[in-house]
Length: 171
Image (cartoon, rainbow, N blue to C red; front, side, top):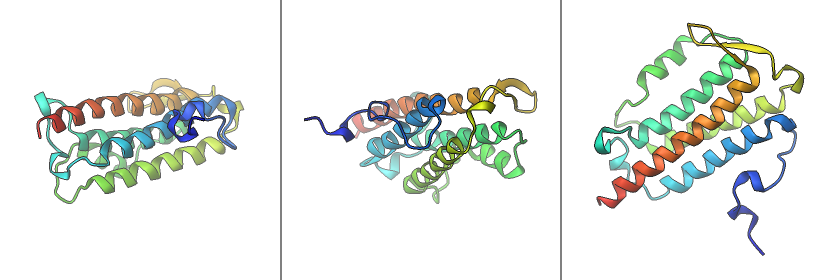
């Protein structure tokens, strides 16, 4: 019999207390979290900021998926970004020595956990409510913001996997 943990998250069944319409977003975020740990388990810290062919570094991807998730949750609450969030955005891709893989994974895990708690507390009735994004107040909705955060994280996980594969092949 197949080990349930070997299946992708969306094939493991419903997540308790997550509204039905938010199950796909929750599954995608949990899949992203698992893949972050899987793909970086043996990844050398020394390669964290390497940019093969000028592409984004693994460190950038890890910072970015956390930042985007944080920003989408803020917009869903009809709030503007704080100065702390703008500072985080400005520092995405920062190559400081104090930025470690373990810290980036921990930050993403905490943000995913926060998103799942938010999903649990979100009444399905508000999912289609209009929300705006950024200073330009671009149109979206609560469900649109949640789904964007989930699919965006999956997209960057895929890009990160390619970057990791290229960098590890050069070792």
